[in-house]
Image 1 (tube, rainbow, N blue to C red):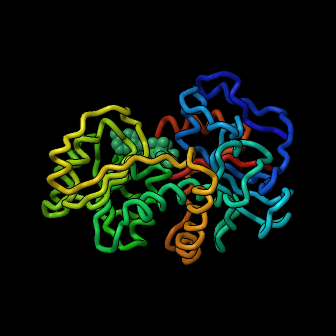
Image 2: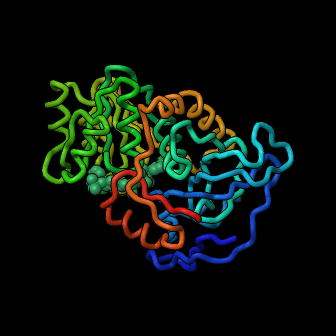
Length: 325
Ligand SMILES: NC(=O)c1ccc[n+]([C@@H]2O[C@H](COP(=O)([O-])OP(=O)(O)OC[C@H]3O[C@@H](n4cnc5c(N)ncnc54)[C@H](OP(=O)(O)O)[C@@H]3O)[C@@H](O)[C@H]2O)c1
């Protein structure tokens, strides 16, 4: 088969569409013939050498895919050759085939294009596990999503609205109209507006009950300032750095919490439990039309370098897909 290999850490041009050995399904695994994968921010870091795959994971990038089951390993039940699926991966999605633990497979939701389904597993699992399992986002609460136009952000808006929250996003202005169409009640231009002031104005001084943050250190102090009493700040990205000072007095006065999580490094059993939860609680929302994959564009897998350039520029909204003919 062919896969995108990283010839050496560096810019997009180190991504090469290369002949590599086919994967074999191990115990409890299936092999998926990939129709599409999606670019995640983490893939850019992996390409640059800043985010090596966890032990035992494929060396090729790609944290999700859609496709068709082409082989099953020993001990797999519930999935058969020919099933149309999408999957949460620990790596290896930028390829014609990938071996994946059966617990990380999902059916393509009814009504979703089998190629576009590649845009769903990583964002659905990340956003649902953080907003629902961890932060217990509830009906009537205010959710602040930083980077509303990201793959993560576009899904978080839709899930937040479906859960009955008022969703506020930060994004560059060119993305605001589309984010309001997706359900954001308020959009904040982080380049000219102070999001702490804005969230206070929007909530009559109360603040956000839950904040889904991708900026890390750069936003930590302001995120705590933007929290409501009993608010939950969940950090899932460090685009603004990893080290910052935390004013525990400010957090304590609000009885607030700060959590930080990563999905990729979680044990297989935890990923399978999250995938089960997504299938039970999120897939019905997708099948009802309340939530959908937000696809900025599709490019052939061989153009992975161009896809990385687009995502690096932040000009995309939602997900950039890489397709296999
Ligand atoms: N922990 C986990 O398990 C996990 C899983 C998946 C993703 N993530 C993280 O989640 C983040 C989003 O991932 P993705 O793949 O969806 O990213 P993406 O589509 O590449 O989007 C990145 C976004 O960052 C926004 N941005 C840049 N500077 C900003 C700022 N100062 N304030 C607010 N937004 C800003 C950009 O929007 P503008 O154009 O509006 O600037 C862009 O939409 C990444 O940091 C990624 O590492 C974490």
